[in-house]
Image (cartoon, rainbow, N blue to C red; front, side, top):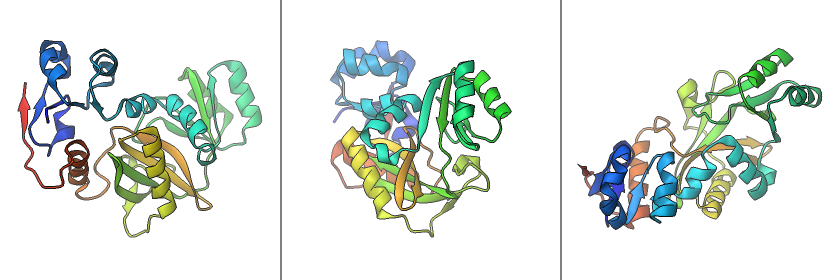
Length: 263
């Protein structure tokens, strides 16, 4: 199988992958047309590679499109699994909408930046002045119910399988490992959460993502997913992800030494 990657670090462990720098894409169109899969293009490359050249992309185009920002993601999830999404409103950042939110939403609530990851751009709003400052800095108001949780789950999907699932617990409002959260491997992960994520990812064709799940009264609540998730959660996670990627793309369960060629 002919594989081309645009991100060599994300494809370590895959055999015979050729690396092409994203900015040199148009110099290698013949090679790209001949490839069976194109791996980890930048978002700016996706429309050309998928819609114009009609190439197979990994992660899937759906993973890119729904994972591009929290607005696209949340609106899709509100239709696909409404009972598993915290109460959320997405509004234009206008003075009238700011006043309306503060009138209707009890404090504290959560406000998020539309495009951010690793817990950045997620704020616990505890006063009107905090929300007004947030609104001044953002064109879109993303307001979400604060859930009564002390920890959340990171569930990693690659291909059609879950490759990791673990609890994260923070000392403050954020549970992200990148924000100081601690992985709690000793705590059992409820099967209702992994089953939910696996079924949803297969239904939507999301094939490379780290899902963040809160458990509320035994019900998995979907916070978001990250297409380019970190590997620092558990030891060996990068290797598990590489193995699952190889199985998904190549249908091969045997170990391979990772070799990549450079354009």
